[in-house]
Structures are given as C-alpha cells and as structure tokens.
Amino acid sequence: QVELVESGGDSVQTGGSLRLSCTASTNIYNSNCMTWFRQGSGKEREVVASIYSEIGKIFYAAAVKGRFTIPQDNAKNTVTLQMNSLKPEDTAMYYCAADRHGGSCANDPQYEFYVWGQGTQVTVSS
Image 1: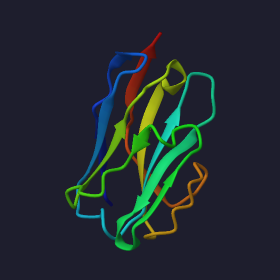
Image 2: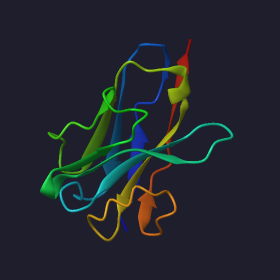
Image 3: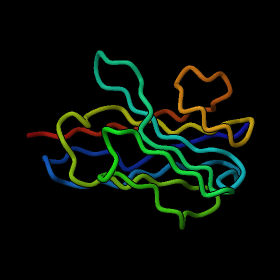
Image 4: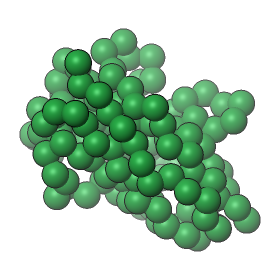
C-alpha cells in the first residue's frame, strides 16, 4: 500500500506563505486523486483542495480559493500545496490523502478508500 509523508508545515504570521509537500512511496500522482484536508483544534476535518492530474481536475474549497493552489508541475510522486495570504483561521493540521481507487475525488474525509499521511502542522499567528 502506498505511504504518504507530508512536510513543510511551520509557524508564520498573518499574510505569510507556506508550501506543503506530500511525497508518496510510489508514483501515484497522475493516476490517483490527491487531496489535501485540514483539521483545526476542536474542529472537524475539512477538505482544502484536490487534484486528479490525469484529467486536469482541480478543486478548491471556498475558504481557500484564490489563496491556495496546487501546482500542476509536480513530480510524479509528490503533490504540493502553495498557501499564500495565510490567515489565523488556516491554523490546522494538514493531511494529504490518496484515493486508492483512482480518481473519484470524493473530497469527503469520511471516504473509506483514502490512504492518509500523518499530517503537518500549520500555525498562523495574528
């Protein structure tokens, strides 16, 4: 089974930028929908963005649209999340998930066929 490792989390001030990376143990980027989720303290896990590179399908949650992007020039086993204009409400643990069944892009943290990474913490201070 593929393993995912997130990195790039850090503490930044409001308005700052971070670039998160999710590295997979196998080449899955083109054939599997890759999704970023986040979970703030005391909050439910929520979708941030997803990409199914094979068909160029990209989704951004309303809360991050216009500020976060998933570059499409990723390496075959890596998906990144560029986060700009960060706000305190972006503070959360960020998780990468791969759809084991391919490209459904469910964007639902309850989807049973995700493989999850361990998460990377992003903290934005005002």
